[in-house]
Length: 184
Image 1 (tube, rainbow, N blue to C red):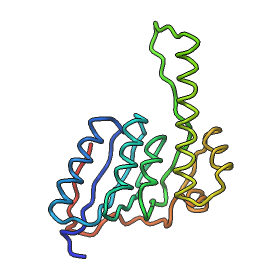
Image 2: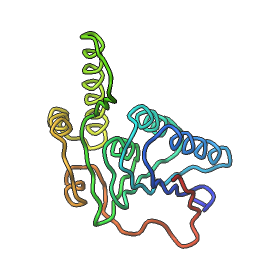
Image 3: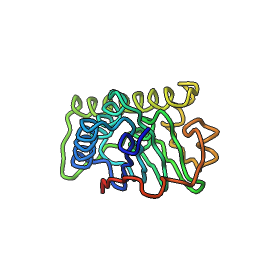
């Protein structure tokens, strides 16, 4: 592939509506210019589940190659976004944190029994979706993955490789002269 057909996206930020909007806009613009491979250099604390799941589904659904590379820490919903890569790499000193979604409660707030039940169902559904994404990416047993996400697990590079979350541990992020776009 020529250099123009591959670009790198440095994703050093939280998963929020505005960062995902910038990312999808950049990807669409670059696809219209002929880019066929996107390599995401990621380090993210996670963030908004809605934005993260939307970004994951967007990257899985576009007709180009997506590669992800954890160069620091990929946590929470960022780990789900990381799974969008058909090839997934990490540096030797990377970390991953997989867990279920959380419910932020800003006081004062009141819930009815029905609205609280709806929130609990939503949290369960998010955990089931996260588990399926990780199962699809790793090939691990779905019940084990769901248990791991419910309990919350933190993996170093070697553990992530053994788990199947990454395909290879490598320190090189990109070649000299590569085109790198920033999402911060």
